[in-house]
Length: 494
Ligand SMILES: [Mn+2]
Image (cartoon, rainbow, N blue to C red):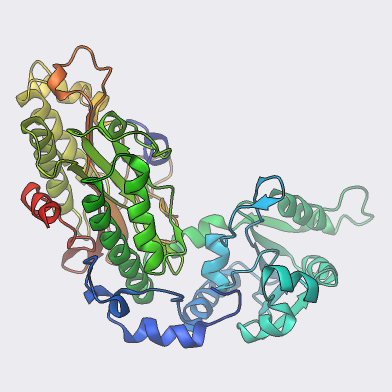
């Protein structure tokens, strides 16, 4: 998915289960399988490519808590962290969106249940308290089993309480703390409640409550998440492999499909069958002119038979999401104009990928890609004038639109800074081994670009791969999925 300019950089620069713990059973399947070497082909042996129910091991979550606790200890005595789960989201009427845990909460706990609160106390030798929903036999017959206090302890908590009694636990932990690090990404009601407990409204004789320090902990966890651990990289590879199988299925389905929905369904059905309970973001399957709408997700228009198909879609496996885009001709054979645009985007992408190396800055790939696409658009006659002048003016941005890279992990636009010096923006962060990022340049000539030769209109091309920064360069985690004109035409001919 393309990051908006706003998210990543101004100056047009960057960018673009079961509720119960099955950790033990699944930990070994993650540890024992070399996910990286799994075949990505749609026709791969089902047993080899299935990711149903995979989970990170309990040691991963315990390790993350230990790292955060070490940070809390450095902040001084009486420091605690409070981390809140994702609230349930209404869809309509009495229907809810399928529940998906908050990424920060998951990273710290591995707990998938709603209405959960994790408390970490730096000064305690039993630092991890989990507050959970009470067991409820009737509700559990409807919605499935709940952890309860016993399940919370089994999942690594030192202490646990269930609501409503847990309200008092939360209150006393806050009362006894001097410094509270709060992480409540999306639960505004809880944030307000915590604030009321930390700084009670009204009078306080000795004002002792008002000496407490409240710290927003989101940035602390974000920085932990930027460098991926080996088990996370394995999980991301699983997500990418399922995604690659989905893209191949979609490419082949598009040859006989009459509607974009059939192409999106081929992707979604394939990855769901391989164990992806969710996609990491809404699938973008735009045919013809819809390829030029960056976040086109309605996917229900008729397919133009001689047009391109742009599919930007990523399976989420074990909470980690892929983010891959391919663009192909639905006929299976690129037209002259489609090929010209495609090869220009590919050249830009290859140049940017070559700059994904330790020590290089995040924005270098963007600069290289934009120069290539700007000059290439002049060569094709789409931009007219002097190459240097046009590049400096940013005229290409009308067709390239977005940044070309973002972090990837638990979130499609994953947590973490792109700039490291206060006041500086624009992707100055040096790349480090263990970072995972996308590289995704695109060129889009919309149908209403009436000043552009008609033969180019309605062609939108984005090519997006998932890159792991390694000690000696990078690994294209989605590199097995056809990417060149020849490889795509060959894959569609099968
Ligand atoms: Mn993306």
